[in-house]
Amino acid sequence: MFESLKPVAMDPILGLMAAFRADDRTTKIDLGVGVYMNDQGHTPVMASVKEAEAQLMQLETTKSYQGIAGDPGYNQHMLELLFGPEHSILSSGRVKTIQAPGGSGALRVGAEVIQRARPESKLWVGVPTWPNHIPLLGSAGFEIKEYPYYDRDTKQINADAMMETLRQVPAGDMVLLHGCCHNPTGADLTHAQWDLIADLALERGFIPFIDTAYQGLGDGLDEDAYGLRMMADRLPELLVASSCSKNFGLYRERTGSITFIAENAKQADIVASQAMSVARQIYSMPPAHGALIVSLILGDAALRANWETELTEVRSRIQSMRTLLTDSIQNNAAGVDFSHVQQQKGMFSFLGLNTDQLDQLRNEFGIYIVSSSRVNLAGINSSNIGYLSSSILSVLK
Ligand SMILES: Cc1ncc(COP(=O)(O)O)c(C=O)c1O
Image (tube, rainbow, N blue to C red; front, side, top):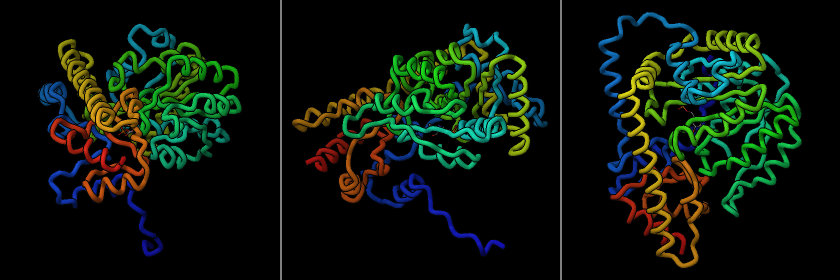
């Protein structure tokens, strides 16, 4: 049977990681992989997570199956983290959250539920978007349509072209938005742009599907949730996929959630039952460990305060690497404008380098950047910034 299969090409980012590992230059730098790294180039377990894990060892009395919707305490904490504990949506009966295996699992469950509700719906994604959005959501059955998002020439969001396209989206279609810290560009919507998209959603009747995988890594936990909170206030229907991979550093624990907002409580109950049926058909129930850690942290004032301090350190470190990189390029190359790097949010930025410059960085200097010129700012640290900026300056010449 298997002789009919053809090998699948490696994901370009995984290919880049393999090439990086095989490179024996001691000065090599990996700016491709999408995980947070500290100043020592390590992706640590947060101390608050370690502490919650230690408590869990004592508290956990069974490894029996949990419910299909995951841990109810975790789901409630995620609702409050996303929308804020005082948001009116929480007491409306119109919102349901179920635990999912990471942000990826959440996106897929959301997509499968939409397919059941309205198989003819198309999914509109920004150009560019996280590359895995297309296979992950497309293989649920969606026809994918595109709207312009980022203009590589101006290094800004192309808001006019974006809104112009969204004005044509038919009622019942889905529009995928990044909640914050846009991956890959780092260019986030302003509050006014979010408001305008909500106006268009109401006018046209399309439904936003917000992917929020980096809450807390941009401007702060509340600030990064502006769009989804405002839309939960104003729109009759909304989906939010969220992930604890980055803000809790729980990547491999596959911890996420999918939230549905429906027009009324009855519909919300039905949507949740459909989501659980989808989950049952794919993986039965989500992994427990990460969600129990998050639930312990968010449910305990001291642990939560420690986690927020650690998250602030992560955010500040990334912001300081943005400043360092921008300054070290701009101060040493007349006429080069890297200010977009300073302004962008979250772990990623498009540097704006071309393919030849990226190839040169990799071949001559051992600096690994994906072909879109997206860099992970967290890959920069006090030991490699000097070498990185001098290498970039030499390919800019
Ligand atoms: C925009 C975006 N959405 C979703 C995800 C998926 O996150 P997870 O690892 O929790 O599945 C990622 C991960 O990189 C991402 O960048």
